[in-house]
Image (cartoon, rainbow, N blue to C red; front, side, top):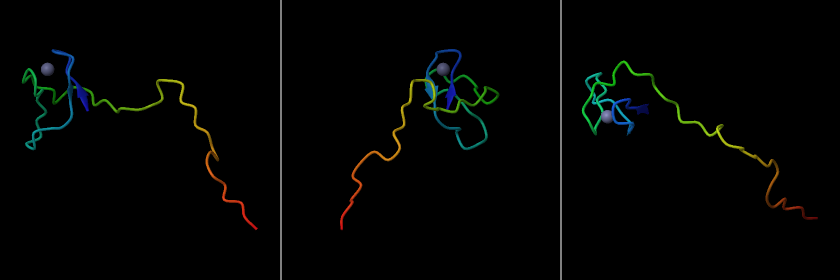
Length: 57
Ligand SMILES: [Zn+2]
């Protein structure tokens, strides 16, 4: 994903010819930095072992 600096919209893929153009304003985003969408921005509280344990005898 690349964030277009011209219109601030998100562009998700290149056009197949190695060029990456913004689908909204058609600017060339080929040399723009690729943004990796991660989920570490917020307080991610990962609970390990949450759920049914299935303890049976
Ligand atoms: Zn754009």
